[in-house]
Length: 74
Image 1 (spheres, rainbow, N blue to C red):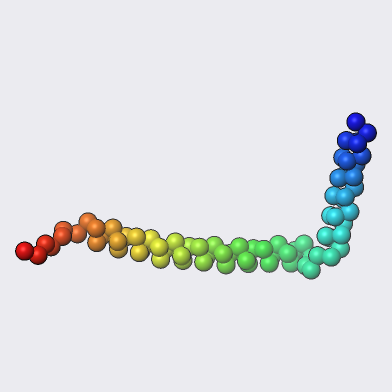
Image 2 (cartoon, one colour; image 1 turned 45 degrees about the vertical axis):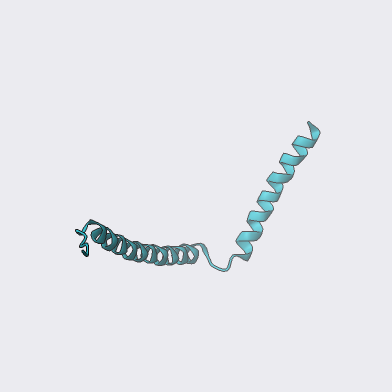
């Protein structure tokens, strides 16, 4: 049981130290970081939406070609 308590205590202390170091070494302040995250998230969202629209158009074109009556040569 002593090993378990020591492990839990070490994990808690390590977590606190890691959080403090991360805050001190962060390249942006909280507001700047949130703004940067929002800008990057918006960029990713727009890229995904564009890729989805392109793929949808491609799939709709393929579906239309499959639904079109086939002309057989005799």
